[in-house]
Image (cartoon, rainbow, N blue to C red; front, side, top):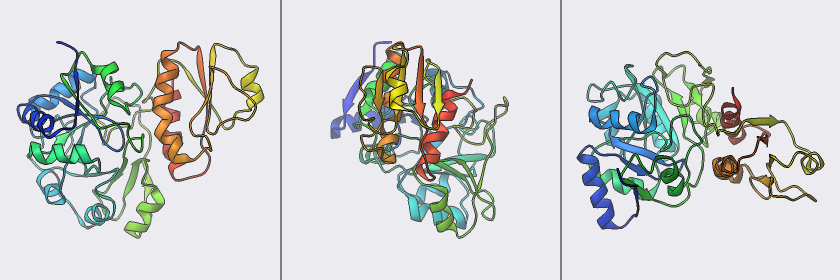
Length: 327
């Protein structure tokens, strides 16, 4: 297969990609979280192509993306808690786990009777969803387990010889995958994956406590993506620190990289970088995967990364870092 084409979001290109999706082909798409690898969520054969392109195990389910709230009942069985969260946070980086409708193929849900659904906010992806006229299954557009892509170029580097089309929507605004909450039991919601929408925000919207799910390394079907202990991982080993001392980094081995939350004072070097000049968590999240990819490509022996502090978005950042560092 020739290398993938990166297409801008012109009306002509969007119409072309919508036709390709309806025909059962794969298209890499931008979202506000990370880039996804999309296929018609109601076409089992098309969705199997996602697993093949990514090298994704069949036990790891896909997230179904819709463009309007009216579509939710076509793929899932909503309840009052789901509707409340959807009205509050959609379009946006929130995925809901609900009982699935028979129209959703078993391959999408890893054979489970549940389905993961969200309504993205990215302008181009929403236009493509409307033009395609079908819900789209779209996990991250990268080889399974590797660092998620946040630009079209990241997708091309990882999957460029396995797919034909990449829709370029610019760098992702958030940079981390969506928050996932299990609302199959509306009286006992569970946070399965932290993201830009925090547990505190979910609890305020629902008016009840939201428990946290557990990590699972067992080879059973996963209820939602991003549950494996090791995920989002560069090839280079990642070492985590509650804090990094600039002097220690400056005098550390030159073949190891050091990643600070904020710009360190008084030290510089090719192997020293930061995620946000002031350490703001939204900037840290936006650049995290890009920096990990960049350092991984440089052949360092190890990558030292400073953990985020506080709750909220820090929980999502640290979740990705701990899975990236797992061995």
